[in-house]
Image (cartoon, rainbow, N blue to C red; front, side, top):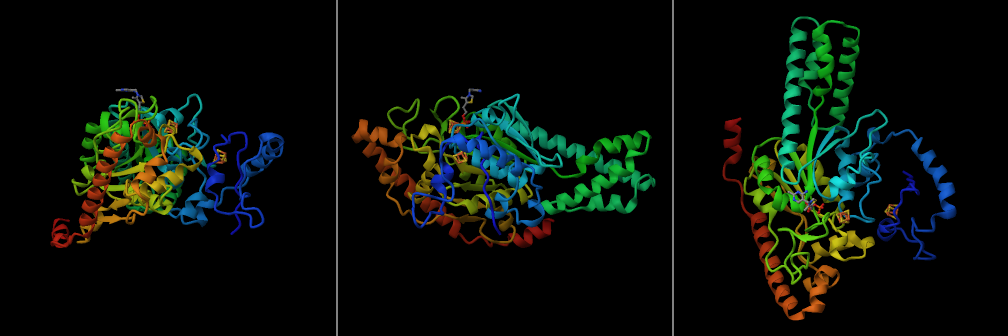
Length: 457
Ligand SMILES: Cc1ncc(C[n+]2csc(CCOP(=O)(O)OP(=O)(O)O)c2C)c(N)n1
Ligand code: SF4
Ligand code: SF4
């Protein structure tokens, strides 16, 4: 397969991330890559035309690719584009990927924070739609109640789907709707995106049949028909929301057992208000309100969610393992219950060269500071250990990693004694945390659940 990457040159922020991360170098001149930065003029003139041509290409991606793979997902049209985030932001790649995987039937509840600002720079929006008009719906709620806001969306969708199903059953029984079509609509599996597309086809058939009818029952069914297609509610926000201000509500919503998915973009500070310390700020980092370096460890948000046992939990870092992020987003979507993904997101507040943000994520994982894992309760029911650790043993000294980011290095320069003490505490903390996770992942989990779960079904 041949692929062309077409840059929307008028919207390129010049962040340089694509060039930095591009693995394809010219043999003759390693400085030259498959994608390179150059002054906008005169390139802009020709590239505007090329981009117009690109936009007019028919989108054939969805039927031919395996969406839940790295390559397949990247051939899907992003339904999140041209946001107002900082150049090279570490949050937006997660939202873009999510929109490629599930955007066509996704409803987003967005906590206030950077993601609500770049995600809702009204009157424009970076959220987009497919050629057939399908795309994410999005709304923003308060910093302190966004999980509850998403839960409200879930309950509303569930209620509308229930009403639609009841109305269709009644019409099929009274002969006002085609029995076979109604049966297919009511029994359709919709866990795979291909199944969702098939259901859309059936809904279109139903709507066509109803459109010529004038009675009130048909009109009601017509207004409810789209709710026969399953909707995926994704609750998005930053660490300030998920670890601190919205924590109680988020815990409540996760404990409800409802099918909601949560994506925490963890920049480890309150980014949107200038980088204040949150409970996600790592030990030894400086931030606003932690000018002398944070002396306490990062809250383990994922571990808290795992203690419930029935919540899908993943910890991911795109720059360290792209595949694992795609896998986690696909598994969270497929899981029949609540799910939370905690995603490492680099940010201008970290004091790094933003071109290299993906590499910083890789370094955080290599230093053992960020563990990649997936906890899938579906495995528990099979007597298997639900926890899979996706990152290996640390290969990078913590001190070396810390020297690479201003948020740690600042303290190393200004107060080396305190920095050394915090470094030792951090080394102990990460070794302990890794050991706990490894032991949990090695546990024997077959204690007869399989039979008990089967008996309860
Ligand atoms: C109750 C409340 N307190 C403070 C604010 C101001 N505020 C808006 S966004 C924000 C920071 C959000 O941080 P985080 O959740 O980590 O998201 P990020 O900006 O890092 O993506 C704050 C403090 C607010 N909107 N509501
Ligand atoms: S990654 Fe950055 S430099 Fe590359 S095309 Fe996108 S905005 Fe432009
Ligand atoms: S402040 Fe950080 S999280 Fe917010 S848009 Fe900028 S880089 Fe992204």
